[in-house]
Length: 343
Image (cartoon, rainbow, N blue to C red; front, top):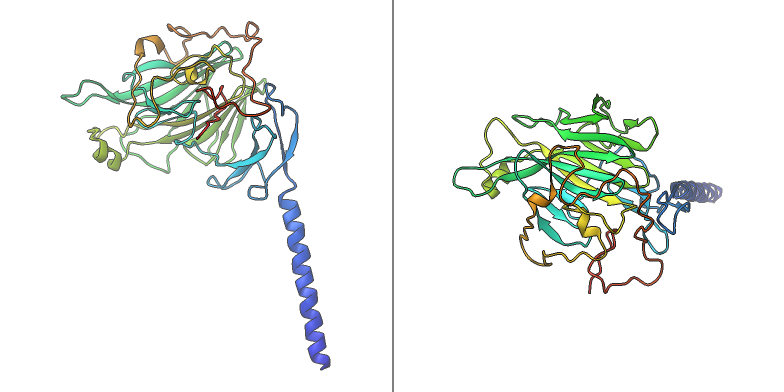
């Protein structure tokens, strides 16, 4: 009987210890917090506790979800997200190229191979894309992909591009960078980070190779993956990719924080509150033209028919504010914050 009591007591103590330990771990897991740094948001400056499902804002696992504060949420909530570009979310530009606008509508913009186009043009931010591709015999247009991004921000120039490769190798980094017209080396490895001297531009490697996040202070977050055109893609779409080029290109997802109501560009225009998207929801492959309006002379040029970049936002006191009360679903646009109303 004494042995039984002793065994029972030991078991109870062990259960208590396990419970206490678990409670401590849970408390520790949710104790991390994040801060809203978007000055245009009503949540600006708020420090918010992370959800239990993603207790940290960083991770060594590139596939893990991390915590971030949704500055556009009416209740200023923290949420979980993947750290790689999501090609099925608003603000994405992937494939050949397929865009999802700030209004949530899918459209294609093919551009032209070996030319540059304004993706986003605002008074203090310009983002251009270089398109690569080819035109098989018998086709009337090029197959194209976004190969590089050029960014002008705070009087600085930054570019990132997918380097050309005959065949894809996952063990090789296919990203190259430049800052103010000088080549920039960012060491390979997860969580490798580079800052501009003024700390207003930050590049963080999400995985050791081919995946980064570009942060533009108070303006944008750009998630970028480098991928090839696969043999399966080639077979499905009949790209007729040549044997000496796998067309390494970018998958991109943008999040913007401070766009003005005058923003333009292939993607940027879809964030204007008055934008009427000619691509209708439900259309399988809505293709939008306008190459001449968005064409720039180089990756880091600010001159095009619709470009509004001036290098300063002093002339733009009006910034599109996120909703602070009841969400208005009567407008077609999300006002630049990726909010899509559904019936």
